[in-house]
Amino acid sequence: MLDRLATTTTLWTTFVLTILMTFAFQYLAGVWSLAFLDGMSDPGTVRQAIAAMSAEQRVAHAWITGTLDVAYPLTYAALFAGSAHRFFPAWGGRVAPVFAALIVIDLVEGLVQILALTTAVDWVGAKALLTPVKTWLFLGGALLTIIGWLAWLIRRLRKSNG
Image (cartoon, rainbow, N blue to C red; front, side, top):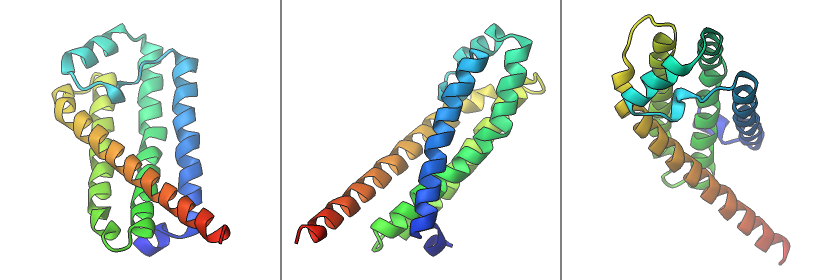
């Protein structure tokens, strides 16, 4: 599985999709005048943000969370795991379980948000743990990926210059 994620085609595909989805979130936030809950970890702040939303905004946020924000962690985690395996072959495969956990954490956070947005259940307190853990794992994966791609680029430039 990791070998498949580390292929050139898969890495470029997941990279492009991650960038496109990142921009899609920004675009949709503008269309619906949304402050996405994904970056909020304080339960009180989350509840206030939801209370400030119109019914239309809550529905839009729930739909975005249930669609785009399901595809997003699957894509960026595949990019992170594939990059780690490709660019750090000695140990990169050992961090793949961390990125699998990141997918689960992000999806659980999304479920908590959808339940809160639809007033089904208030498990917003879980965001106090889920959101910071997701954020740190995401930033670690992004940093590892950037370092791997930069190291690859430097090696490639050195090789082409003789």
